[in-house]
Image 1 (cartoon, rainbow, N blue to C red):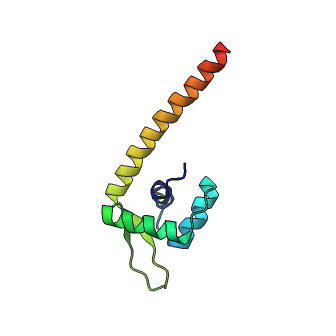
Image 2: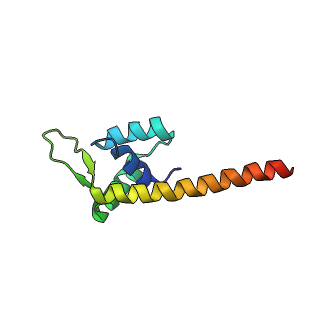
Length: 99
């Protein structure tokens, strides 16, 4: 999976992070390197959708937080993705049984 929006939502599911923190986390759990342009374009879109919001910070880096709406969206997307993955894996297994 390499959809920047879903990767960002997944990264924020366990707590607030700033952009660089998200980049490191996503690299660790998904093996995907998001460039700053891709990351911040997706962050802007996620803020506009109301799925994340910026937090107050005294630091130069601005952390973001997953909203309740964003959590619901992420759960729906992961449930759908899981259904597709399970179907594909089942079909692959069934195909091996016929070979």
